[in-house]
Length: 240
Ligand code: BTN
Image (cartoon, rainbow, N blue to C red; front, top):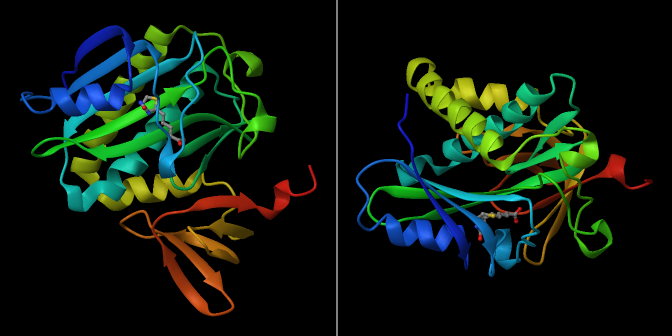
């Protein structure tokens, strides 16, 4: 089991930046949390709206850069399992690459960045109490509270760190494919038609799976393509 050292701040720019700074002198796994972020960052250059009462934290741990994809899968699976542990019947799904959907809407986001030396930084935002207005966002959003799941930030973080430790151990024992297969059990839209938006390209195809590096496998008219970075849109969401 990993022993996490937790450092809490009232206000930071971004917990990822504080974690990257701390990783320069860290020797073991650690966690940075903050009540407020003044410059929360999201994927693909977007910002992360850091509403009061929500959870913002960054985990620093040693992980080989070449296995980054596995860390994405481990972390998002652990988040989903944390929500399930609070409500076994919660309708939770994983959206490639690393979002968790609750009742079909985004409840958390994750930003992985390289820290100093061997450290990787996994920054996570969880909508515990509030969610940003869906109309202003690329996707529908929700919070645990809106779905009737009441918990504190502290409780959620502790449950998550426990799940992450368990999954890191399971991966050691059973190999990386164990996590990939588990992730796919909860993937939204598997074997369905999706659209993936990359920088200037929109690709439509059947979402057939993910590979060992967590790349999305999309079966398009041009054949099977591997996608490393992008935003997924489900055709099934179109009419809502
Ligand atoms: C996304 O879905 O675009 C990723 C959002 C990641 C947000 C979290 S909040 C804690 C950590 N600090 C940041 O600045 N970003 C991540």
